[in-house]
Length: 203
Image (cartoon, rainbow, N blue to C red; front, side):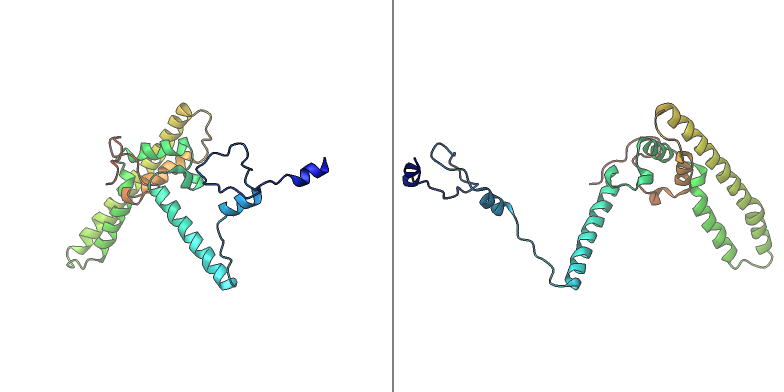
């Protein structure tokens, strides 16, 4: 029996993985180490610490760029933890679909700052500063305060009704802070236009 085995010749030549011919009877299975060796790609090991650092920086740059594009495209996988979840998305869409007084807070503050810098004539300057500081600024602050309170209260109530199993902690504050931002500077970018229509895709 041992003699028969020694006399039998077997072609142990490995068959290429991309061989178009089917492996029928009489064709041995490719050796595992050879098949895995073909699938492996050569990895260039860094020569020194400086080269390793350069490769790590290049990899981080690629990953950051991919994450940035994903966030701009609205892919929630790349969002920070504070922006993830259906409750936060609902809050963003609710705020972005409305024109709220608080979103004009920063532009109005800039106008007030510029008004104080302009060299008005001596007889007009006290009048301008009086209107701006004693009337305009307090009205804007009161409007921002009431808007923020209303937005936080409204969002918490709507989220509790729409997503009863979601955690409401911080969602009202999240919506109020977004309502304070200029629309073009909001991040993640708005997915809806004022009025509720979806933002058209960029060409």
